[in-house]
Length: 221
Image (tube, rainbow, N blue to C red):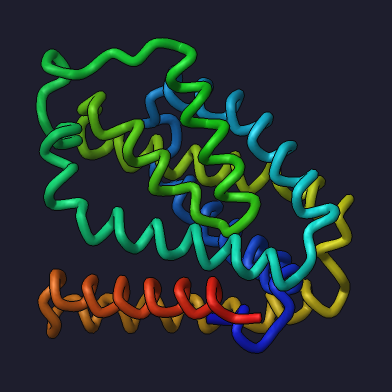
């Protein structure tokens, strides 16, 4: 939504410290509960994805970057909307480990490449991570801990790349700090809505808005 009235590069730079701050709080709660092999493979692959995406960010115009973000946002919304259909095919993260699908190393690295690229360009690598982890049926705690550790490391690795691309400025960092209380307010609002609005209805409203925003960015000049 920010990209409708701000530079896409400016928005990408602003969002990273906000996302990273939430990762820090989440990681402390799930410390060392993650599936180490999955985190390792995803992060090693993400190094290539982040590097490749950074090369794109170096030369891409703001107009084309908005279209890239719009495309990723639209794809994310569609896949999330269809999750009730494809998730049973991949498996439920809470099911027993003995029925898990064992991925090969190259598959984890490839998932990491896409996660790193999508995360660098639009901060939307999470869906790739989830689609890789679900078939492994790690159990609820390990599943959440693994996604949290992966997001933390992805965002941490992106910091020097963003500095090199000059996506950070003193003004952006000050703005990010000023917005942190609103992140907390958003969490409290989400908790309140969770008790009052059906989850399916709320998620579909959010996904519809995300899809509409993505399509608008794709079509805008």
